[in-house]
Length: 192
Image 1 (cartoon, rainbow, N blue to C red):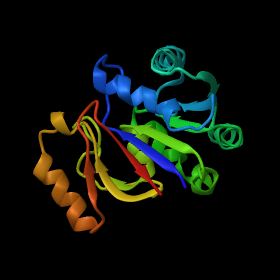
Image 2: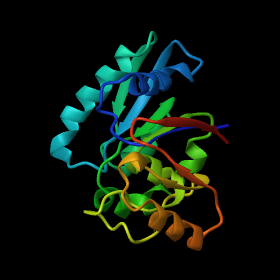
Image 3: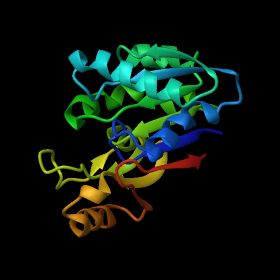
């Protein structure tokens, strides 16, 4: 069984919802020491250090367990380090940075068996079958294909979305898979 935690975006906001989200990084693992693999492929590499510091602090501040952090440097490194990890976190960011790497993750679903996958915003899209990007600065008129780790279509940053009906219609016309919408700071836990 794989556990999936999907987040609607804006993990940087300090609030009770995000504290509960970051607590899930270790709560759902039945170990006292939890190894978490962080992936920031959807962000420019010069931002990684700041994101790693911020997210590591949020994870540790919301856990009573010992936490070991690993960083994925590239797709091959991620797949290798996943073997030694309990949790994989794919952070949000820009589609144009992450989507070209999708072909490198053909085997990831099998490697996630027995682990926890956590995806926020673009990380949620990564795991879904299909999605429409959230902001007008991105290609928000096209249905994009994710890795299909979960048989769902997704929309995030829903509370900020100005074209809700248009995006729902794009997904409904493309597939009859269920559609999951999440507001910023919201998260859900799914099991497969």
